Length: 482
Image (cartoon, rainbow, N blue to C red; front, side, top):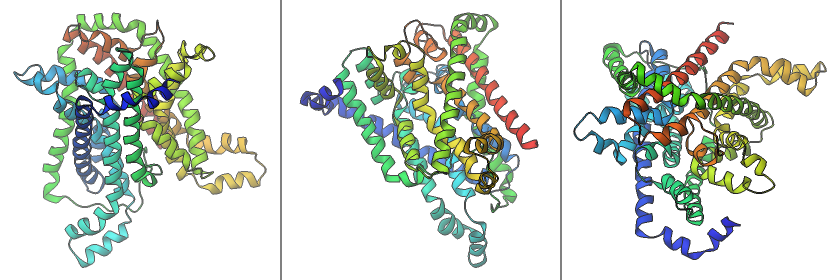
């Protein structure tokens, strides 16, 4: 009812088109454009040198470069706030749109690298061999590789644009007002539900419009993969460029991953670490429990949707889940509140299940893509053979499909666990009274807590996340050795 009222009230539209609201919209779009362009540019460089060249230690470098993608955004934010606070004009930079852009680029460059790497991996090496026979490799890059990888470049730009437009935690921590923070403020602070809903609809319309421009590639692309290799991949010898490029990649990894981590460690003392643990202790159990439950449910539904999309060719599932994934966390939280805050559904709204549902809506696309990549590589003939000898559908799934893709299922569980553990936007809106989780605890006390204490809290979450990431690669390694 309130959504209908918001849409039918002309004054809401007038308020949206006021100068202040338009400036806020353009600021959000500007940040997203700069982040998408920068991340795609950097991601293209890293994707090429780590996929198409013989760069030494490139597998280790690529795995390390992915770490910021799996860290909670507010951990990186807290690290860089502490770092820039040491300089005279550092705070004015980090607490600005340029600070938001800076952190967004560090977060989303690994995602761009993944998308573009997959595009490069899928290029048939015979095309490059034929090109080299008649022209220089520079022309091969410009006239063969670049056109073939163009869909990946476009997809990287659009996806990063949407994700940076919908991200809440980074601008919220840096006190930079953008559309997502404005929606949260109007809804939770001023109780202006109608204006919050109108702004939410504008944000969703922008995201969906961009997705529709490229839905046929993004929704069907296997850019979220683990351990997928191409048999036809052609690599280029770097020769004298080997060490300079290695140093460039290593420096970026140090700057984007190791430096912020070292900042947290440097600012932490045993006393502050113990104090932080005592403060976070009541929230750790709930955070781990809710993330574990959500991750299990995500894997179950992710497998169902992935199988339906890949084997039953219900491609609309990919598009629907992608649209859900790009809905901003704050908008998703508002939608869940409006739907479940009724007498009939209050038993969900007032329990931890509302948090689980928020996690499911936010991350099911990622889980589905991880599992779908493995199902895509599973020969259909294995399932057909099982059906021929009399196995029913559930026996086929239990004895053939699940054992073969078990590595991806475990990886999907652990990655879902990492993302749900650090989710702030939707959780901050929907968590029931009396429930406290790790990101919410840090967000609510960081403004008044000493920086050393906040750094210690972030370090504790970083240690938990690092443990899970290490477990992920260890399990993948174990399965590959079998």
